[in-house]
Length: 385
Ligand code: SF4
Image (cartoon, rainbow, N blue to C red; front, side, top):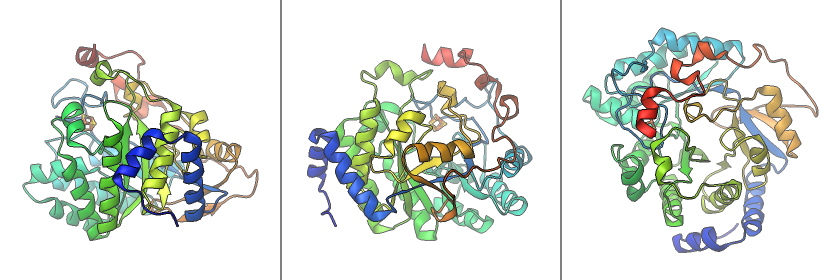
């Protein structure tokens, strides 16, 4: 076992260690914690129930203010149409998130979970990031614990880790000053873990952060995982600048070496996390495949639907067979997992699968109008140009 890195050692390693050294150390740990030849993935979809939001994050091109012409909030029945497509495509997980919509209250969220569990018991609901739960508590005049308990009773068992960005007050003030404080993000995840939920942890880097902000983020996660374990995986991704207001303030874009560095460093620093997630989606397929050699053991989901990155014109698609192909091409054996990272399917070498519903959804079915065009919509241009 390697000794735990201190904060100061972390800064030193992240800032000065050659990438090859980080990679070697990360791969050693990865192979101690997970089967060396195996890379896991999940068959999932990532639809949204609302784009209404009043938080105005400067890195976000997805949201619309309440009452905006192209804002939307889906009824429970409309969200179930996404579940039906997920069911037709043979998916096992639906990751559902939305904007921070001040008009929605607890009964809406409970109804979403209950209806999904009743109609699609074979699909795992991985719903609502911490800031959505925080807003739900405020709008419903109850505590976050009460929200979490009500959703647990309705059948929710895991939360996505979105909305963390960089858990540093300095960075929050610079990129999303209206968002809840970093302490609230970690507090909500810890409360959820205490109730039995599992959740992922994420980080969006490549904007205004410095190395000490990244180490602060990872240190916060590591301390929380020590106190109240429940994080299944850590998944970093880079900021996507297109159509966002923040792009004017960012001087250096994070490239693939930054991604490999952060993945490797996270694997070394987060010694109490079992899984580190790389992504074919967030960084592109080629870089994604390469990144599996930098400490990651998971390749994320197939993402039948995805609208948040798409709003920044970052569009990437795959399906079950392509996922198998990418993992094999990178030199590993693919294994399908569930949301809790249990293995649910292994494949014979070269096995191809039957994809029940072509694996993709036509755009008009799943996207609001402003996401169906590759040109900026007037509202977004007004915000960003
Ligand atoms: S990132 Fe989330 S909270 Fe921030 S503006 Fe976009 S939808 Fe709202």
